[in-house]
Length: 108
Image (cartoon, rainbow, N blue to C red):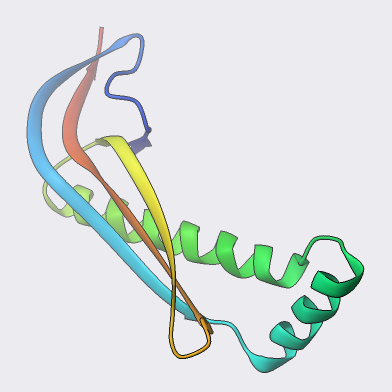
C-alpha cells in the first residue's frame, strides 16, 4: 500500500478514486510519563516517553487507515493529513487521526 501526503507520485497514474478513508487512535499517557515529562519541562530536554507514545499512535492511525483503504480495493492513499489532539481532564490522552483519499494506482 502506497501512502503519501501528496496528490500524485511520479511514475504512477491514478486509475480510480475510491473515496475518503480514515484511521483514529486514542492512547493514554500514564502518570509515570507525566511525572518525567514535568521534570523535563523544568530542566529542559526532550520527552522520549511522549515521543514514543506519539509515534505509536501515528503508526496505529496510519495502519488503520491503510487497512480501511485495502478493504475497499485501493492500493494507495494520497493526500494524507495527520491531526493530533489531547483529550481528557488534564490532557492525559492523545488522539491521532489520519485521513486521505483511497485510490487505485498504476505504474506508467
